[in-house]
Length: 341
Image (cartoon, rainbow, N blue to C red; front, side, top):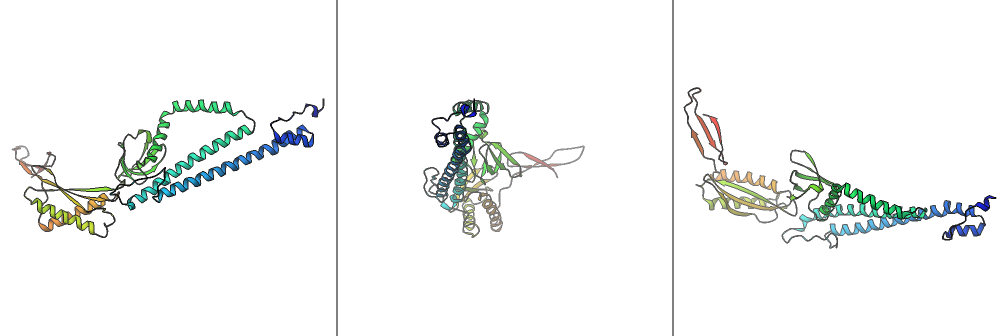
């Protein structure tokens, strides 16, 4: 039996093989042409379509995120600032959030496009993709049950980014860890505390988030004064000091609204606490508070206004062994610290 008699015939659905077979009358040549020319050409076309689709999707995502970063309304990233929050305060955060969302959407788009391309390429090569898809579904379900914590971390990370709970540079309190966010990932969040320790927190373990730098912040300064001081005079001095800081060129872009003296915040047998507040830009509240305390101390010294002092209680006892008298200073919390007199 000759080779031509045992040569495989073309599949009627394979137009390229049928065309070469009719043109040359050789089934072997038709099969070789199908594998060496038709299938590689089809795979090349698939790759070109995949890269073009990926480029178009990335371009569309860039347009959406750029509009969001510029503050233009977009259906996906539209952010409505509060009435009392200036647009300049939100601009940096808006850009950061748009970039994070853009990176996430680009990654998802690339994964979807190349997954579809890979399955289509396998089908083009003649492999049965039905069992492969079914097997992938079973494996996915098994991994979902076996890696529930990982899935929880990823879903929590996606919702944190979409809901804009925090971003890079924010000062946050995540419960066990408190510090400045250095990186926000889909699985973990990295932040650094004031002592320089880097904390890695799984997104699925974050139950609540306290963000100290979102939109605006508030400087709260409590000033304890003695009962002998004139409270109206103290409040007037605090208001003058706060306005001086507000009108200072170095703080003009930091303090957002006119300072307020809220008045008496607390009363104890030893002192009266007067509170003054200033609305500031995010992450600027601590610097403003330090400046306020320095100026309040200097102004009080100049005007002779005394800050509260804890009561001093003298305790005398007969210590025949050492012959000492002990003096105890009362602290605001009621504890005493003994010191040799």
